[in-house]
Length: 332
Image 1 (spheres, rainbow, N blue to C red):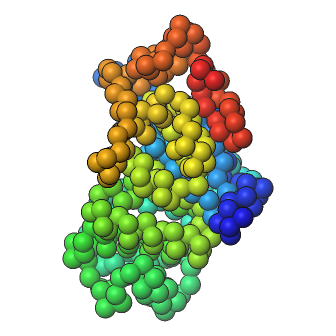
Image 2 (image 1 turned 180 degrees about the vertical axis):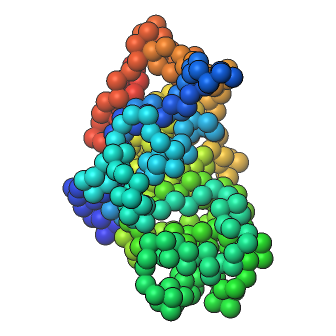
Image 3 (image 1 turned 30 degrees about the vertical axis):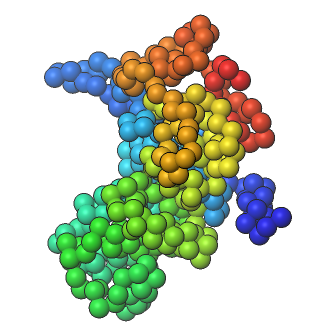
């Protein structure tokens, strides 16, 4: 057994650092008079565990609830139901002062590295600001740590006093990562962290994230629509459709033995660089249903090529098919 495989097995036996249980997030639709008419059901009964130094990837089409899941865990938007248990404490029951203390341990890296940085502040101030908020160190110590984090993430120290607009997209994302590291977190929620970057820069940022994970013992929730990127960095992958987590398995298991029809369709869409290799492409018919009025039974049945009558009436139970491979589908 290789060292990497041994580490994966050890993580399976360790207690989760973050447990998300039956997470729901509904957005109310109100009339002009303020009366709630209906709800946008953005996230529905999402459950998973995250252990130290582990990366869980969340994938799915745009609008499936991936980003909302990450933001709700951190309470950037308040949950409707469920629990997010971090080190034995339910984040959803904490008061604002208690949540402020926990936020330094769970940091978020956003999709757009330009809009996530204050354009009026120099990058040194941006990195130091989070340390000031959480009262970490004195002024000299904060400057020293900010300088170190810039070096560690690939930004030269002489750029400390520059503004965000003076950097490329890849450099700005590195600055965002440095800012998140400043408060000594344990968990990173990475919301499409490389989708706005060139392919060559994507690989550099992914390699940096992997190095930082080993060095600082970070756990990652990696949200992306790019299956190739998710495959490279993730230990486990969860597939979301219309707010539901329809399948979750280890990365190798999911790619070698996908079970849910939606997962099979997603994997069939990955381009193969070798033109001699042919893969049968699964084309899903129809549009994604509205999250305001999702289909009865299995939410995927309106587009599923293997639909049976039971799918239209009964919601499938999320259950284990093989060792650690979970799927919500009536075919299994």
